[in-house]
Image (tube, rainbow, N blue to C red; front, side, top):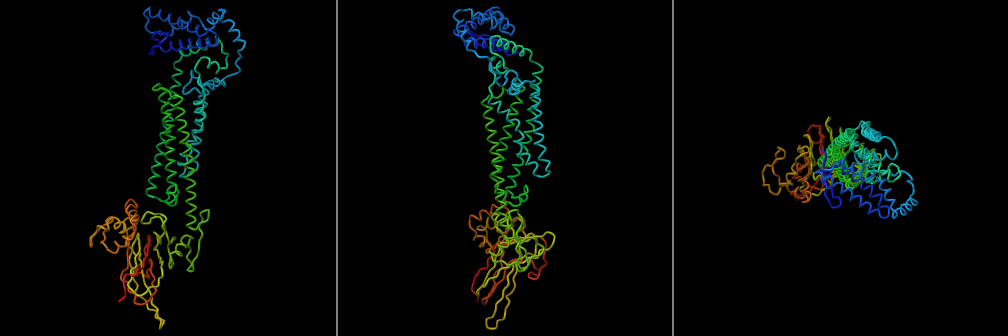
Length: 602
């Protein structure tokens, strides 16, 4: 079934089918293009159009409602071909002199001109134009281009997996825009090359001379091709649709995988999981969060544009929607280029920030530029990395005992969520950790309290205090009683600090509150210690680790009586010689030690 079109010719309306309209349009356009170059040619062209309208009126008078291609061909035979009409026009003395002068000034066609072939196009006519300009069968050009694209995509898709590493899939996503490099020249040609609009353009594309005879032959040839168009063209339209559907499927998978990685990274940023994409510490994730977030948006946009365009091409190849206009193509191409460049720029920024973050961390940890640790040995033979050594020295800590642990400090789960805060820490899940770190402080007579922020994964980890007084007259040493307090076991969630930060001002004496099913009794001293924390940090503590806290608790040793000027030793330990309890496996953390005078000695 053919579509009928209503046309207006010389102020009169006619119903004509689309094939007949195209032949009539090419015929009248060819005549007008030719005669407009001659003096008085406009009147000749108008007369011809008037003659065509008269013949169409005759057909309507015969009761023919829709003009067919056979009617148009009959009209052309009655009026004559272009060269016949041109000959008659040249017989007119008024036009002869002008025609002769035009022929004298006319130069032969010097060569072909590159156009997009609108008559044989499947998508935008670029490959058909290449076949006309360079020679060869247009189908060979199409198959060759499809094979080149396929090989390029296979090479770029398979190569990342030859690394055999977790980075293979992220690398595949990184090279995804590069994989579409063969499409770029096609897109540029589709956007910027002119398209054949008239038989004269087609002749220039083929390298033929433009004259009445060639123009007429081109109109007839195009009409014949239009009539014969059938299974072959339909096959290529179906083939193009299948290719676009396959490309759309590939892009859809790429879009979903990219979105999955994007969401996973955001989740990793929220939980600050270690070893994400081989990133050792959470501050590295923090450093690259913003550029990675932007690069994810840019990559999703880039793939999304290609996905939309491929779906649109698939639908239009089956005739369900018109092809994109040049303006739409330019717009989508520029958006795709901008998003791709933005993606590459954001990835470059993320790599730079990651390198800077690692360098700063290596500086803090006392590592060389290649990441290797610099070790320092103290007087007791303990080997420190430079960062831990400076931590002990700057905070006046002494490492007395350290067995079955490969670290003496740690950072990453401070109570406020600040991952740069360092604290005392030791860990071993296979052997009992034997560890003692201490500080020394000279004090005057009075009543003292030792407090600390601590956490532990297993029992038998303690804070401790003991001291000695030296009698200046006898030079005898008097030992003060040893005091210990066990660290509560909350692991990496809960602890009384987060509870008091949330609810401390609303609790009453002797009210039991619970953290993850581990109850404890309200303690005014703990509430006082938490209340000393700034409101901003208390708010951070309440929100840290999704409101669960990191297991930190305040504990204290109270009523430490010092009768004479003395030297006190305090810190954290798992040593049985101090605690009287057998050391266990697991880990502990301790910091924020405070030895405070809370009263006068009696």
